[in-house]
Length: 315
Image 1 (cartoon, helix red, strand yellow):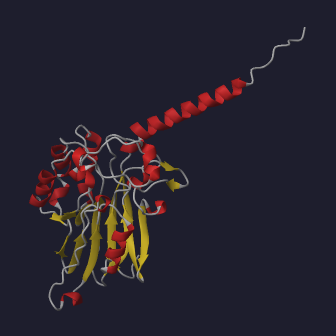
Image 2 (spheres, rainbow, N blue to C red):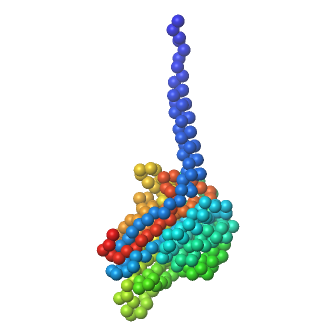
Image 3 (cartoon, helix red, strand yellow):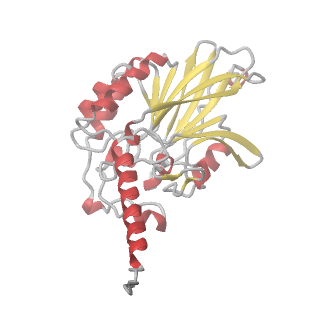
């Protein structure tokens, strides 16, 4: 006898929904527990030094967002000293917890023995807050209201950096010698919270322009206005972080967000910035950590960047 039972048309849809939810849960688990600790070193070579200069190794750190108990992050940070950089550049957002200064300094101790410069990010000054992730699609995140700000021990952190010899470039400029090469630096406070005030490069002596030198500009957040005034000021290289590389990216496409007005395709990596008839290399680090309220990364591994600067005309 033939059955007259009607098949349940919703069954295939139920299976599909179940598989989708399972895949989503597995992806989130991977992003939250695996990829965010797959630390890597991105290596780039830039021929921007004057002819005859000795190559210079620059280690770019950004967005560490340290929290007590992050042993794998601390161990990896310490291991970067084996790269023997000539210079360490830290572009801010070192903290994600009030009690993270000690663990951070312990992790960075091997690197603090090398020459360094730094600028702050908002998460050096203020503790991160929980935000609805969808809010980022409406535009860059907003600074906490003054009445809601929970200040971090940034003075302790900056004092420790300074005691180690790292130069504070917060809205100031300074020159540092490396053998026969002089690097003129300028840096700004975090543009993301409108604290940036551009300081022109040091003028030096009447013959300083004739000595071998390059100009390097440093900021936490790579807002276009900042990149423009750095370029107009004569920068040969610009370094920034803040974007986390998009943090959660689409494989084969890239970042969906930059959390500033920078185009998403520039949210991670080495690109050229064109303004006022000049073209300047811009390195944006995808960063090392995340806010402790959003500890996930997908298709965007945490990174430090080792830039090898070589004489112009070389590869």
